Image (cartoon, rainbow, N blue to C red; front, side, top):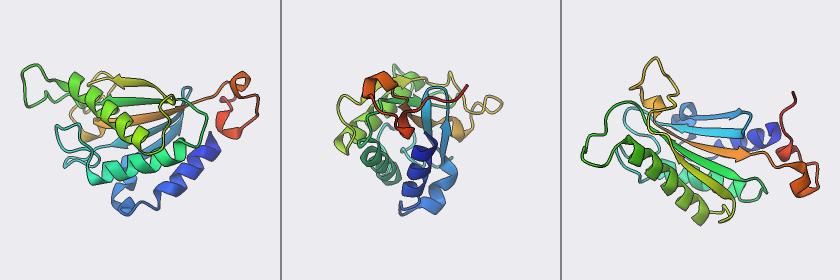
Length: 169
């Protein structure tokens, strides 16, 4: 996973607006795999405010990730998260629907851009239940998409690939 993280960070630097986006892209290795988080700013970075439609920057970043991740055998999980601010439209559409819709629209775009149909195994919507900054529940950084590249069990591939190695205990 460290090599994959390095390769993706290098590829992301070639995105046209990288300088304005770099503080909103974080990659960390976790027990689930490589977690790629695309966090929002107050004005919206990867998604239009209150919308599941990616912005041009969001489309570009998700397309880049799809092209790179589609080459791998790893399974992918996509999560949507919101801040604690109640959704402005009210009615039956809440942060639950928005977080799930953003994760699903990310899946659709990524599958149209290189991720195989069988590669995404979960689309998760968390609303504001797993805040990135729990001390500031309305902070825009809590609004994010997480793309998790899961570990591949060695018995599934029969190969010792650095992208697939689980973390050392």
